[in-house]
Image (cartoon, rainbow, N blue to C red; front, top):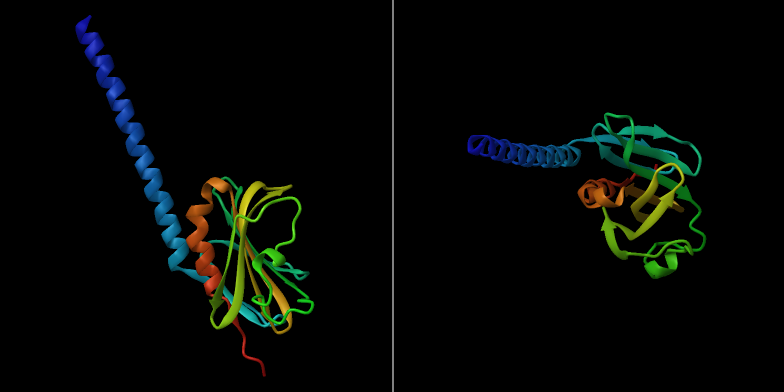
Length: 187
């Protein structure tokens, strides 16, 4: 009887140890994937709106052609979307740069709250960033960060979103993508 209890204890111990090792392996895989997303990039040039940007390598990039200019999506092996980056182009109205007004005034939504905001330069261009939760019909709950820039009299909005529990893992990828944004030289 004692031997059986000892062997059951050993099995339980081995199962816990195996689960721990598998968990560590999953974290290493996630970290490695995030590092891969950060190291390599796919260049994208949008001549009509006058910009270029680098999307993470391995993400599915698709031209949209309407106000949503381009969409880059991280697709999981099971075919589900994990994170996305959308770029919209619209009229800036009377704005000449996004620093003219506060981030709170740029953020107009009654459905959700602004979590954080700030200003930064993207390769010499004045940009404002806004972080907020959102609910999308197809994707469900997401956390998003949007970078707003005015280029060639167009308001360019780079919106990056991921599930709330994965947002922090994708944040460096989103920031690196935004920082790769460049205004094309005009002729």
